[in-house]
Length: 66
Image (cartoon, rainbow, N blue to C red; front, top):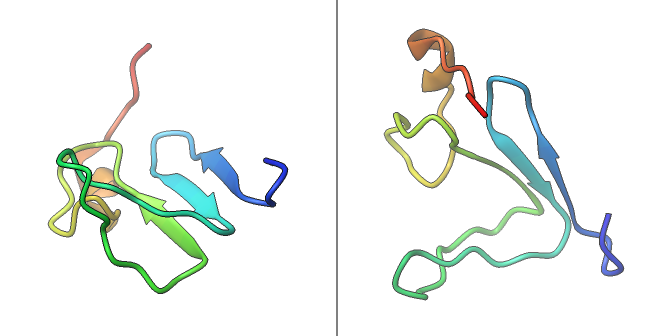
C-alpha cells in the first residue's frame, strides 16, 4: 500500500486490481476516465474493454510467464 492509501494486487492468472485514489493514462498520456475507486486492469491482452478486464483471461486460459 502506498502512503496515499492506493494499492495494486496482482491476481494469479488474472488482472491487476487497483484500489484507492489513482489516475490511469493511455500510451499518449491522456487520462482514461473512470469514476471508481477499484478497477481491474487487463494483463492478458484479450479484453474487449481495455485497459479494463472483462474476464476473457478465463476463456483464453491466460498464464503469465516470467
